[in-house]
Image (cartoon, rainbow over the protein chains, first blue to last red):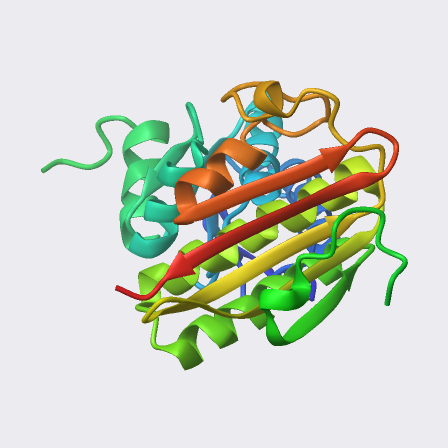
Length: 123
Length: 145
């Protein structure tokens, strides 16, 4: 199932809706890279809340997405990694390296606001 | 079936679910079967995720190194213990140096070199039998309590 991508302000939000096949993830990679250009987005959020497994392929692809979007001049945040998924990833030795993560969509948006418009948010 | 290239480990499995692995979609099906069985056996949510992740990684190894193969999940017994048994079988090129393949960071494929050592960490028991030119059989178990 193709992952829907919403445009919200200057950001893109890709909200994964169900277990993804490898092809779906690769499609998301292509879609996000294209839409960052089309909408001149400064940030992208990939919401993985519903993913019940993140294996080496999923992690590798998410890293590739984030790196590619950075090359397109935008920042990516992965949000919603579930606690048991995080546990299994650590056991497996998988890391997202330098890719930004946030607890949920709200925190992800706050992160992008801070990153992209420093000073815009006064706390 | 007697066509398996490596020793058949299925004797310990009581009516296993068999999932042929030939595409990324099969990987998802295999790990869902594993999660369902783990849930039926009473594994916690996080252990269900651990089992599903291990299956996913084993299925990926099959795709990457052998092209096709099979994942079986079934119920295992050892003494009074009950658990889930995952068997990953292929008739691929096999692994020439198994101890080396079990080292973190070693990979001959395009993966992260995490596959087998990672699966061993996720599961309680891990046995690998591989013969170059004939195939590989991984048996991994996770016990309840």
